[in-house]
Length: 144
Image 1: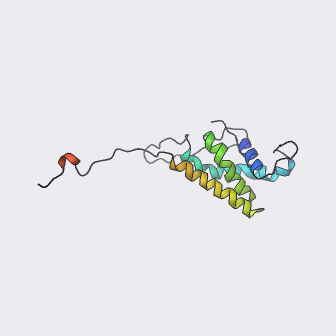
Image 2 (image 1 turned 45 degrees about the horizontal axis):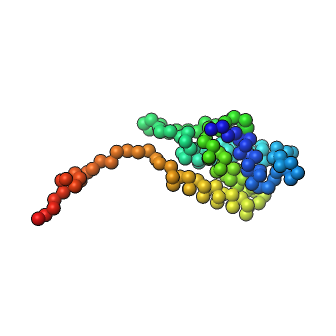
Image 3 (image 1 turned 60 degrees about the horizontal axis):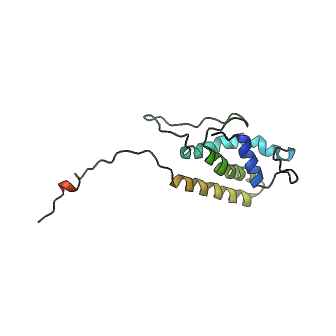
């Protein structure tokens, strides 16, 4: 775990084809509007993907686990790198493009949801022992 909001923003800007064409830089004046909204958006998206993160853990009793707030662009965001580097850039790209390119935003949103579903299908939830309420095969009646 070491992905920062700056890295997620950079990946999202690359996805939406807004990087500087000659250098590939993403931290430019043309992208200041995207940068200004990024932390707000990522702090919302983190709650959606947190249950799939290896940083999630098991709650104690009735406590609800909460992912820590992303304070700035250079801090670790507190989610595992697969989610941070593979899924969140699509979610961020979708939100950044909502007002200016709805078709692209829809594509990125669909990809974001698809990746969450794919990741979620392979993540085991909490395990509990199964109680055998029927007594098992040794207690079955075999009518004879």
